[in-house]
Length: 114
Length: 115
Image 1: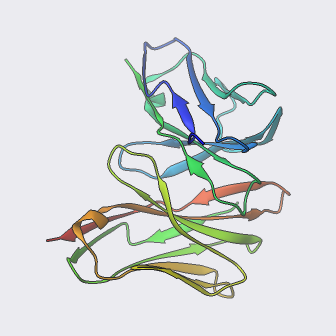
Image 2: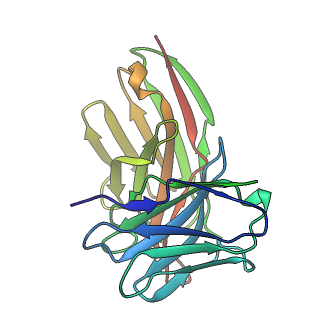
């Protein structure tokens, strides 16, 4: 059973471009969480998704950011028109039954906006 | 909104000593409290967790205690070793007032074990 897989591991984008971050949850896990981490800082909640549904997006900026978790395929975190302040590590985690069960993290995608 | 406070932000201990990290949470509906260890440049990894129906759980040198009345929980590491050096995050989760789930993390504690 492979762990949570994120790709790419490193992503460099110029200001104004789009960034697409992918997260494949562990087999059997239908709950995905995205977190953002700045250097030397904590894990800031962005969005919680189940298959085909956004359950809670209260931590995600209303503009430029979107997330999806389709019936087939990985969860995608999309950042449009990136700015330097978007540079961070983006982690996703998955769990089988939502809160109250163990959540496992992927390796993260380190986004650098130049 | 939901909040988890974590203290201290940094902690240095001598090898062999104990380390204690404390967290408080605001949402009384929280019922699951995991602890994660994150080494530099790596993913957070679950090291121990506790559910609201127990007050203490131990796994070798690591233990976690929970006081639901006071809404705080603590991580205890005994006989610390240099490889324990990392950032530790607490988290709280459960069904919140909006009827949704999420894990809310503390701000992290950077533990340094001095040889």
